[in-house]
Length: 163
Image (tube, rainbow, N blue to C red; front, side, top):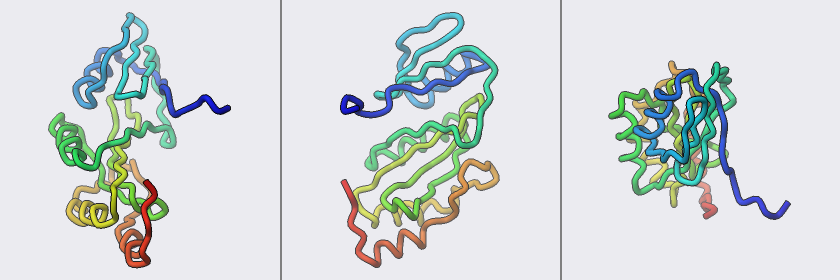
């Protein structure tokens, strides 16, 4: 199927559409495409969110990941925290050393991830070392463990980033 270019939208139920609308527009800058009494359609960048009114049934493995620009990631995370949202991260990924993630939940406990693809491992390591104390394992949002040493080992081995 050659016509697919990426994720179009994700869908999930909300127990309170106004609260969900406020969260996604205020915290993530979503734009409303349309809204009825029973459903809303939002866009966060190119990702569409179809959200009907209903009883949420979040699961750990269901989450939504958003890409972030490495030049503005600090401002992005600062903004989310300034909205009163508890954020767990940054977390590195040993298998994908160029990626760093931050996790938090929306009002219905859906797990959200901000993922930043850095241009070099020096910036990854700087971010992981600088903000290591901001990790909140008690939130139960990330199970991958501390990957700082794995990323440093990749750097020592001369790991080449894939654009």
